[in-house]
Length: 284
Image (cartoon, rainbow, N blue to C red; front, top):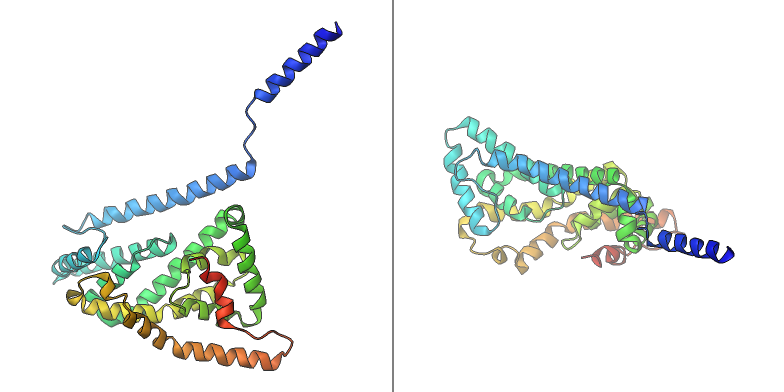
């Protein structure tokens, strides 16, 4: 009888061991949140594509040749057509916001189109749209929860959190310095900011100010779009030199702020911009 009970107990244990293990609730939550972000992104993109389809011949730009073609289509469509001008502006705004919100590359083509259609007057608009789209990205990942980043990039998140804490007394200048740096991974800054203690207003304003040099140079190139043959004609060494030159004044303010903070609090370590930006640069 004892052997029978032992066999029954053993069989029950084997059956239990063969049952599938329940999914980790945390993993399920992460997957659901990622799925929600993807669905929202696809849903809004479908809506934008529906608006694009209302303009004959219009399509989303995927190359420099597409950008040139789109400029010609929109110039013909908006000529002496106030409703067409309004619709074009609406589509451009929504598409620009969508790319910034979901960290989709390709805004340089939109900048070229904006430069060809509207000229330098569009720079304030693009700066505002960049800041607004980045802020939407900020809140989207805040809603999704830090456990997504903790699950996929915990070490990087800890390093960035440490950097933010070390530079909290000069938060605004620190964020502005990062935004002005041409090679900084802006998408990473957007998604981690809500979880490393970046205040939303500092985030928004530095994003809007930091993108000015890039927008200025790309809009300038857009005004001469017909003369541009390849994207490399824009993203050349002279392009980078102009970005750096235009960023000089804000960098000087950043340096002055650093020196002032050092004089007020000698206990704070010296702020080395290259050292501070290095952790973000390593994520590219």
